Image (cartoon, rainbow, N blue to C red; front, side, top):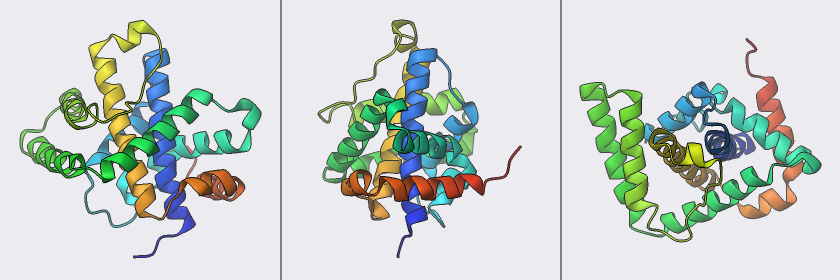
Length: 208
């Protein structure tokens, strides 16, 4: 299957969106709930029809597209914390692809999807289960993604679970980006092209 620049940018936007959500939860104790839901749901689409369908359509990565544009087009306003999470997420995803953990993560997410369907698990329970998967299979891989923020939020169990769930969603997007032909050199030498594609995608989204 061949992938387009749009596919790669949508997947990359998923990484930036997860990084933005992690930053917001850690710093503010809250985040865009619709975008967080789209990122969480991306973990359970194992056979997507398109790259965009992983997130429920391009609208599901609207926050990621905006974050990607601001990070690439405005170096003077670049959020270094988000950039650090993105780089760490891609690096960790690459390590997981070469390990046995990825298959186990997929198996456990598949099982969780079945249980969610059968028992109508509430969202907090799903997040807690995703956190457990992250702790079992991702936290053991070095180097870990170190999240900074307000101690009040980082020590809150629900917030910590949400952060780990978003980190796993970011890893899923990073793997998708690689599968679409994404590479680190593109982030260095094709920044304008990526930003322009992201802006075109964003401009096509319906406005409220």
